[in-house]
Length: 326
Image (cartoon, rainbow, N blue to C red; front, side, top):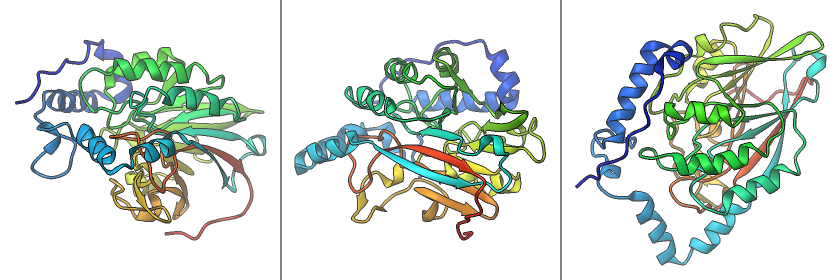
């Protein structure tokens, strides 16, 4: 029998409707309500097993019985700092060497030791701005306040402009709390960074996976035709649409890189609708450069195998190096 969940708090919907779009906000809140009451699961398929059993608990139990849990948890807490150089031939000289810290899939309520590990790592990184591509909590429904407390601690350790988008684990009601932490949330919106008279646009869309309330056209309405535009989208699934809208660089997460992978980092599951080459690391589709983070945290249970978590620093350059197109 399904538990009676707590419902998200009441919010003033008018500001969010202006930002996200009235129809998309109505769609999102309707899906949230159905999901929160257990009528609609996020798993694919007709039978939503997550509505009937606590899958996270059973997965964790299986790892503990196998004797692999302690090792997997050590891997989960061993966050790697990954450097990625991004060649954008039309990058203004003012932004040469500009460094973007990319966090993804914090799932910050999953493990009590996780926030301190992230904060310690952040102290060692030099960056100009920070972006977060969503999934601030582990559970996909019910109360999200525990994750907000852990996320607040991490956010307060970031002393640079900070941008974010929501993922499929995030309710729209979290936006006010996240923005109070200093994270500028982008709900099919954009924000410009100015240096020496030149602009770099950070554009962000709402969740393209479960809620499918993204609008890539609206997100870059303010950008100039020749301006560099960087797209934050929770999942890489919208890569074709991003290329059609002439975005220069796309940052995503959601896949966790597979989280539990075969030797060599080969994922068993990626949970995304795109080529496996886009499930982790740098990629290119036509003129669009992209990067899919393996995730800073983990989902379901606090283990990782053959797939270390990461904090990624993307350094922008005007160099001419290009990866072969997919």
